[in-house]
Image (cartoon, rainbow, N blue to C red; front, side):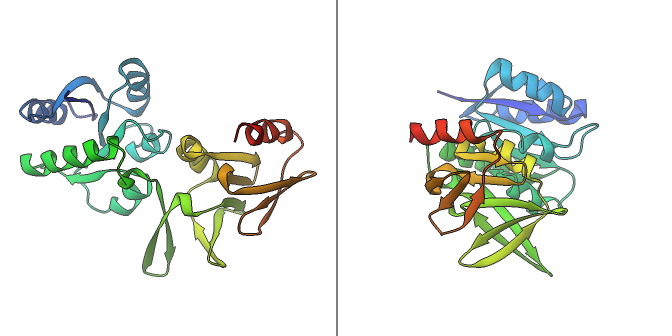
Length: 228
């Protein structure tokens, strides 16, 4: 069965070129087109594609903003004229990042990666990136027990060290909900599988971090814990 692909780009010529390129591959077919992120989201709900080829820069919401609202499916492959957004693209869990003009062999490899991700390989795990000076570190999101908002930053801890990222807690919640992360407080997002205990209105995580639960979210937290 062929991959079902949508093409999201505000430039009609670019869309037509990508549609033609996808149609010439052996593993994919185009099932829809959109010229901005809002229409793309409606299209995704309507046709349930396997893969979304998404331009990064578009009027209104960017392709990056769109990708951060999606779960593990459709798999996103970014297509752009700009190379400087690659770190942000992989932070948004993209399968690949293709710079225009796109070569047929690179598109084919990107679709192969998307197919592998859909088949359940570990490459589909979401990632987050943290910057320290000129260094960018990439972390598997599932290795993180908790994200907390503090001032304008989002903070997480791995191996006892704090890391700061620019991605908001709202964006992380949208992107990681499908992977078992739950908002338990306006400033707290936790991975359900890493909760060891609920003591009153406080969660104890497997790495011994303690997280306050808002009273508004307490019933939902208990409900989710009961399902584990």
